[in-house]
Length: 268
Ligand code: A2P
Image (cartoon, rainbow, N blue to C red; front, side, top):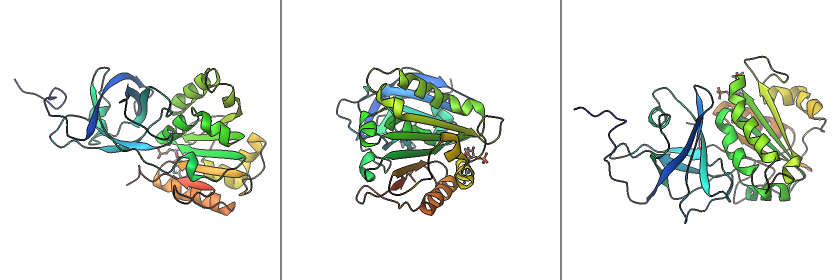
């Protein structure tokens, strides 16, 4: 009998990592899925951080950085993932089922945290594709609403089905007993670049033309009132950073809070 990579599970759990159980898997499109795992009792993180995850399918498992999409108070941990054809981790990860084991390194980190921003009136979260994941955590955290009067989550994708995860999340949030009332201050601005939609185009172009501000009936971004967080591909990070700098915002970090932050953990 031959064993293929999906049935070969007899590898020891490496030292120093958590081995957690998958509790839910949901596929949104042929490229996107979310999954939830049990949370180790000792695991603490700040909403917006990422962690390294892998599968127990090799002597030396492949790990990749994944934003934690659930808030820090949640009793499970959620991730939102792309399926990369022939991707060393995601080609296996996309086939996980309830009851399977996920490896998670113990130390979370990241820059998309409330602590890395100076106080402000309005927080803009700019995301493309799976870059919405850290914001899925932050928009479910009461601290975000305590720190800012208004939250704008922008999500730009190629096609309609890729917006579903975020739309489902925001709809559930508005009726959530813990943050539902606070979340009335959240606005979700979705745009598509490769299919027809009421709002079309890259967020960078919509900022340059001023259309996003007209659509939301908001003033231009200003360092006095506005703060930004950015998560997407390398090109998107660079272009969005340039746009925010054009409005006079400055990049910050955990040890030097400023007016916007960028997460670079997911780009090669
Ligand atoms: P586009 O369709 O015009 O490339 P990807 O899956 O490649 O990461 O893209 C996700 C979304 O991000 C797409 O809608 C894509 O638009 C958009 N995007 C890609 N590059 C940039 C960029 N440099 N600035 C802003 N948005 C971008």
